Image 1: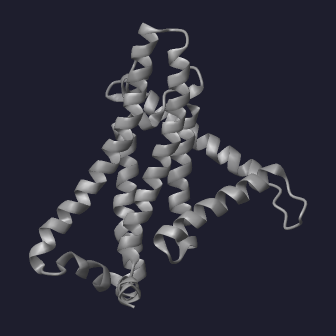
Image 2: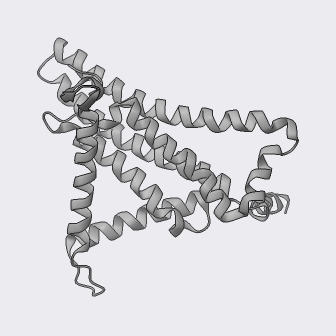
Length: 233
């Protein structure tokens, strides 16, 4: 049993390879596009709406409320990015029960790419909210000696996000493989169900961490001082 989809090669020509990671990443993206089209092709403002639209509105409202709870401002601005991260990871992990499917989140390349998206999104949203000076001055607070530590923190949390998601998905695959050889009838089914649940939890955790980091980068000085003043009162 292959642990990582990177080791599964469907086609190769010279240095170019088509691995399961690439194939199933595009499968997940195509499925999300198809579901989005089905859910939005007949949007209605009337009370009588389709099940697709009702599901979509419920999902979008839930993600928006979660962003509002964490970021506490301009939740609509961050909805497309956070929503795309959560839905991609969620669907990629949810399809693990399909025979022959290999979750692309079991590849460090995929999780690293998702973490890099968050890495670049943090300063982009931060600069849009606070401006260049307002964002970058936090690197030298409370003293300029903290600059290297802040930079190391940026890279370390990006690495931790990638490794955490990759490790949890890969460990689930390894556990199922081990139990399949020991108890091939019932244990793998139970672990498969638990794996699906863990996959959804990991999608939620990844999205929440992205929200926390973006919220910290986009919170202005006035917003940072507001909780302190409320606490003093």
